[in-house]
Length: 367
Image (cartoon, rainbow, N blue to C red; front, side, top):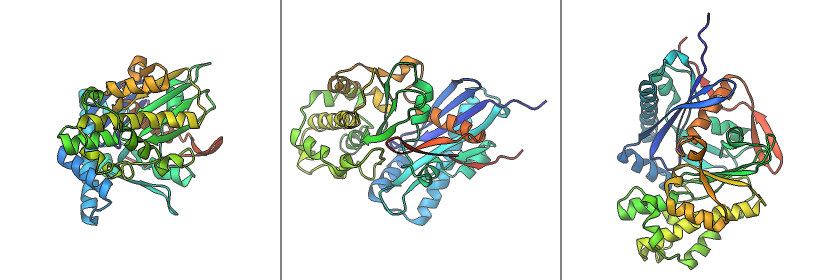
């Protein structure tokens, strides 16, 4: 009798590039999160990734080596998850990885999204069938390559007669509008944690503003905020995508950077919150529930400002039993399930316009 494989593993590192998140899903008629693990990316590697993303400069030799190095780090995070969860490896159908995005440019003649973290290394080191490169097939089918999660958000959070917004606040913020089983909408909407974290790391020697405590003591610089909200990204049509190659400290004026940390971070929190509100209003999305996931969920001051600006309660995904950090890696595990079972995914092209296709390239493990 053949061994029944019903476990799917998702692993990803987002635009915050601070950790590799791994989710182990059991998928049968429904799916359950069996285990979640987050492995920190070493500071030296984080800093180099940041420099490459912001400067757009790297040698081919270094890029090739980084691709392998991050591949080994992904494999290590996956193997640690398997060991810590005491999972039997022969129960795993596949591993689905996002890799580390270092460049995402879709506003050009030949759009592309570049991830590093060699899936061949992951396949060999884990001994598991590995699926990768979801974003470029999404682009080939006419999409933006990001966000990839709206269809999963629909599966996870849909409930009858309730419209919901699922906001993921990573380095970049994106949200899905969950209205009914057949409705699908999702887009990047702004900077998320990108500017706040970059400022803390460069000027305060802190990874981030814990709980938003520094920002909560500051005063918003209205002039700088108006300038930021006039950025060309906010004039682009939905759906759209972006990355840290756009939302980095180079956006901020030199005069503004002379202000106190409290005022700077208060302004950046407001920028993130208002960019979300701006997008919701632009798309006329009315909702019954507003749910937040991603690392930004731990910023209590950001959550407070979102609730005030939206005039609505903000619910963390933890209330549904899903760690705010786990949702995206869960989504990749689910996409791995879809690919291994040859189930097409929807690719949003515009308002009420979609394409369909198989996302992800498969590297088969040894039988």
